[in-house]
Image (spheres, rainbow, N blue to C red):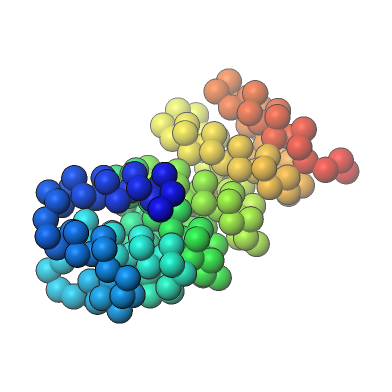
Length: 190
């Protein structure tokens, strides 16, 4: 188990109170047992998260829907764990799901991890979603500066020339100017 997985498991252990149910879920190697937790009624959130996380890391597509829901959770630690598992899962639907979450203005407060995931995925949906999300963040007094910065950095990493206009516009925003200039420098020359 790597350090990230260990940290996620320990966080969930604390949340569960170290119950025998947690220990059983953490120890099982049976993917069917883990998948059953995702559909069984009245399961606590920590149990669903642990099952989805473990299945996602193992490449079991049954975790996909649960991980997407967790990617859009109000708790940043759950979002980060879901993003890690979705990246490991390598499900072709992940790009579309992350793009939908990143561009949903009603949930923009929780868009940071979907934006970062899109950058890591480098999916066809990545650059268009980051461009759209950043464009909305460039309005005066937008409170989602971290999401805007993640978009700028992601677009620099993707180096997609379609981002040139929005990154140029971002250079006029004091909190984004340096990152936007760095991202523009990474774009291919016309």
